[in-house]
Amino acid sequence: MNYLDLGSTGLKVSEIGMGCEGMTEENYSMCKKLFDLAEENGINYFDLYSSDPDLRSAVGKALKGRREKFIIQSHLCSVWKDGQYMRSRNLPEVKKGFEEMMKLLSVDFIDVGMIHYCDALDDWDAIIKNGILDYARELKSQGLIKHIGLSSHNPQVALKAVETRSIEVLMFSVNPCYDLQPASEDVEDLWADKNYEAHLTNMDPERQKLYETCQRLGVGITVMKCFGGGDLLNAELSPAGAALTVNQCISYALSRPGVSCILAGAHSVEQLEECLKFENAPASERDYAIALASFPKISWKGHCMYCSHCEPCPVKIDIASVTKFLNLAEAGAEKNIPETVREHYKVLEHHAGECIKCGACEKRCPFGVAIRDNMTRAKNLFGY
Image (tube, rainbow, N blue to C red; front, side):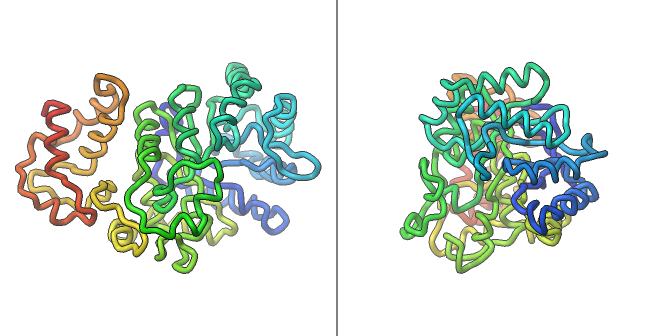
């Protein structure tokens, strides 16, 4: 298992994590089976958005005797009311829900307290106005949660929250179809057929800015809906008009700036095992670039996907990394290059200034990126 830094939290998380969607299968007995498989294969991170008390109890039992082996991302504002899950911005309800969660999980603290499901700007304002964010800070000061997070599907809302520097972890929907959709306060727009009727070109700029801002500010991204609820794995259901593989979806999401962990919402042991195969998959099976370039309804012309098809460079420049650091630097609002970006660029073995302008990289690029122009901009920006 490969482990990545979760932003600036200090946590090292498995790049494959678990969602909780399938843990209710087989009358909740699937929960322990998934945790057993996770422990055997080095998965140390999971998300628990559900407020179902039976599921929370099942997770608590599955964690018994091995709490220290798992990093818990669990949600504030996800409450159980009248026998069903609800999202709440009512502070007394939120407090009661958190207390119930801690009791049912039988834990002393939550590693990431995730403020649940914020997809509208006025909802983010309500989180602040109603004291939800202050409550999360209070829990952190008491050691009951270690880090504050936010879950969202809307890049505009998520970016506003990230830029306030109030949150340390963002749970966000990341896949190559949703990434082309503009911000919306209706999550169903992400998979609505009508939004894929026209030929779509290039990533939504707000999503690109969100990912780059998270990396610059040290906000770790944990990914939901990596497979689009399974639609991306089925050619008939995929909004792109063609199917991707599990490995391609995971590889795409992990290549986005700021991303640390893919939360696999497995409904069976076999589905989680399929995701775990990514760890030993050859580069050819992880490669998503050719598939994306051939999608009949979608194109990324001129947009670097960090896929490294442009390499090998004759002077050994890591073109994808140089381009990523260039984009991160140019996305910043600061007048100076962010220190973390500058230092990561500095330690590269070869830099943009070494480019000999041979153009071999551009002939290989599936997306027609003006790579030589990028190398010139990077040289001018970083100085070498």
